[in-house]
Image (cartoon, rainbow, N blue to C red):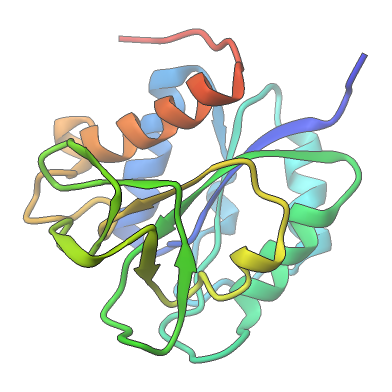
Length: 193
């Protein structure tokens, strides 16, 4: 039996993302590593793995943020450590768009725009479709192409997108992205309303 912890990585960690991710984790019966939030991330990869292992059950949602730092910042260093750890099974990644242009980008499998529609195009931080198919700009996404990630979903700025993803509305865009990762990974979870 596979005892690896089932984890979804999220490349955003500001206070809006934290509230949205916490809400979605509760809705799906999962856990959010709240201490992984920060803009930028402050916890190291080993510290985050310890917290994941202490979570009561899966799936575990974990946030990483480079705060716009170009190149590999602390958030990406921690993300790489967690993704490569032998006790962790990454179900997928929510690759969050940012203002960064032509600096850092990643390949994506698809995106979810601010209207909740699935698209082959990348999205911007507001959740609007961009011009590139299968590619998106972000500030904590540069390392994703180096990792063996089963599914990467592009998404706008979590908890924002002109209030369409606000936690008080249930963070519906983030929730849909997480549910699609769970569905495509074959992970069975208990949905809470």
